[in-house]
Amino acid sequence: MEVSFQQALKNHDLRAIRKVPKSDLHNHSLMGGRLQDLEKFAGRKINRFHYGKEGIQGINRWLVEEFRNVIRMPGAFDKALEAAFLQAKSDGVTVLEMTMDVGIGKLLNISSQQIVDSLRNIHQKIAPEIIFRPELGFPRNLPVRTLLAWFEPFLDLDYFCAIDLYDDEFSQPVKNFREIYAYARSIGMKCKAHAGEFNDAEAVRETIEVLQPDVIQHGIAAASSDDVMKILAERKIQLNVCPASNIALKRVKSYKTHPIRILFDHGVKVTVNTDDVLLFNKGNSEQYLQMYRSGLFNEKELDMIRENGLFS
Image (cartoon, rainbow, N blue to C red; front, side, top):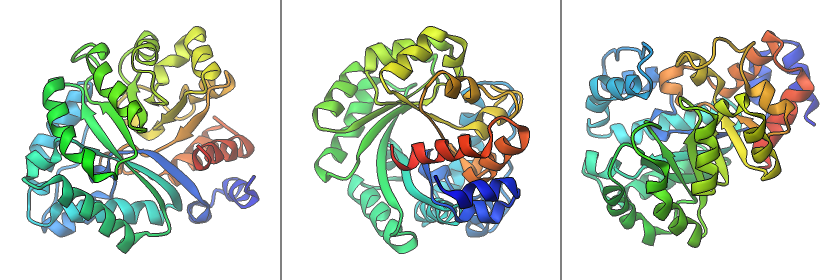
């Protein structure tokens, strides 16, 4: 246990909390930095994200209306990655897992090799001390054959450690992605999948049974089912939870009522993560402090959760 972390929580000392090693295992790379860094680069204000109960489509609309024009600017891709690494470093993150969308090359007209080169170079330039595990992300609302075609150019680069499935949980059956997950496992990639963020506990169960993931991203709907929580605990499937995201997207009312408490009490291994700092403007240190202040966890429990991420 890291006593300084516990004492920093008891002192409500955000600066001290930021100095303590922690992980961020659920981070969407280009949206992992602070918005003001991109605004400075773009030379203009960018309208903040405001959620209006539209599910994931609210985020997608903001990405099209606000983010896409900025990220297409020359140099913006590297600047967004720099912002993500700077944010992680400033927050004391020592283990970082970030997802890069398999379709970003098509959107920005850059090659898979250029993407890898940028990730490597910026990691070494900004935060070489961070243990960095890059991932490839698959948006669930696109045809599987399209995703496989976009996946293929990355395979010979031997760089990405994991895959993740995200976007609209309701867009198509999870079974459609079985082939991608079987192949990823066969070449030694870690398998993650978003489930139970907007959908229900049964969707978490189905994702586990069909895709056999090592990790579930979010998974908070599992808290409504003792059976699903038992499966998660018995199979040691970790949930990378993002409290600030869940609250901002109105899936949870407050830190005080966040279901990560129920999951923890049922023996499910949970971690705390940022999801999209660009949207929600919260690092992990702020989230730990908010959970402590709300009485959701005590300082020893939060230290256990912090260590879950560091040693996962």
